Image (tube, rainbow, N blue to C red; front, side):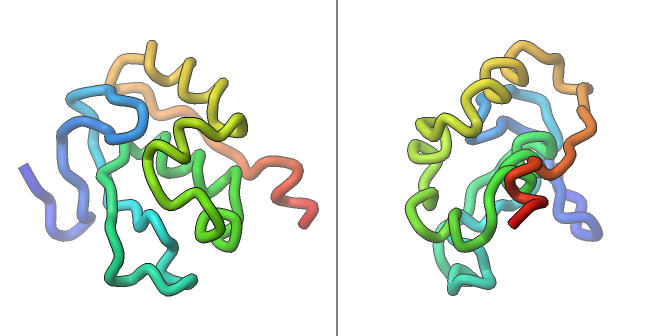
Length: 103
């Protein structure tokens, strides 16, 4: 199922692995950093929001351009361990990290 107005689809999140979640398209290299035509991944809304709340676009472009790299990064580890246990309906409130806000 695909909703063209919001670009959301129900499926599995490529990052946390939960199934039956609304997914959005995440540019593995941010568009602002030249990734407009590079690979993308379907991520659940909480994972997508957490990535952008944790890292700047420059940080993402500088080494976090694959799902494996994102999974291995310690900045997302605690969140991924928690979100994997949550049902598909859970949409936690995500705030930018203090480190990101202070940059």
